[in-house]
Image (cartoon, rainbow, N blue to C red; front, side, top):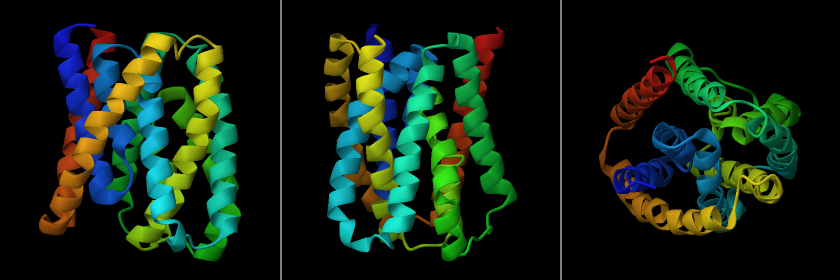
Length: 246
């Protein structure tokens, strides 16, 4: 790996940590496109597996008392884990260019939904019934391109649950998917021993960025922070598309 790519990859992970510290989720939507830009999607997904698992196990345990109910939390998480298995099979089957376009498409879908339906709401009772299909589709996206946000974050945001309940729920979802992804990617030769080491090292910049995100969340307007992230994501996704077509 080139030093420039390593430095920018670490920066992407740190920025993902800032977003996760501020909102409780969203690290992959910054880190995965940046890593994919310099390497490829399978490597980006592989490198993010251990940071995703460890950060969400910690958050899930820390905020476990804030889960709204087992039906919503666990049906969402277990369906997500099943979807991640399907998505991982897609990851090892498609070409790098198609996967990069998939990452860019997932990012643009997330941005479009956030801009078009910022006030969309979903009753908690209905959300509990829709948790399994939403989790499964989100899991497929997570397994295939490393980004489930267009479905997972949009779905949970629509319930208008408070920040701590959101963190408790999304953390279990991400941890469950990681527990499926890791052995599958290892068995299919995507998560090799050298990549396991790099993935373990990738935990450090992600964790380092989380306190800064928590600090900024207390001092920065949520609207401004959200718009800043959306602009950053749009630039990254556009760069991914250009790297495929040029």
